[in-house]
Length: 154
Image 1 (cartoon, rainbow, N blue to C red):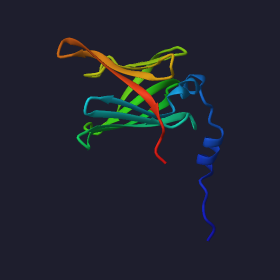
Image 2 (image 1 turned 45 degrees about the vertical axis):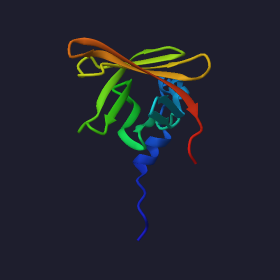
Image 3 (image 1 turned 30 degrees about the vertical axis):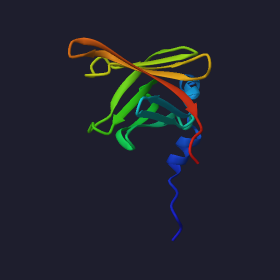
């Protein structure tokens, strides 16, 4: 019996068109680390390919992962979206792209509890500041996470 090849998947992958917006987010590709006292935050992003960027995040405190998250940047309904799936949530949350410049990308979902906004800003030295913000319990809240590029584990 000959092995079956799923040609529609191959054709779709080969013909994938990479939106310019997604290509311009390639600056996120690689490994990032932020140290905040005893807490180490890490994000790792794959380069844009197949119309998507995949990422993972982890927060480690006292040699224990206290938070993990799967991340995707994809084209959804003709627009780029940031899809976050934190380990404590049963389902992912979609944040559509609302602003993209050479050094900043902003995704917003005003219906989400918190955060309503996720952004990444490229710094002049190549570092990145991730930020989440919005309203929580009726009050504005902003959290900034300065990341330095680090060598990815082999």
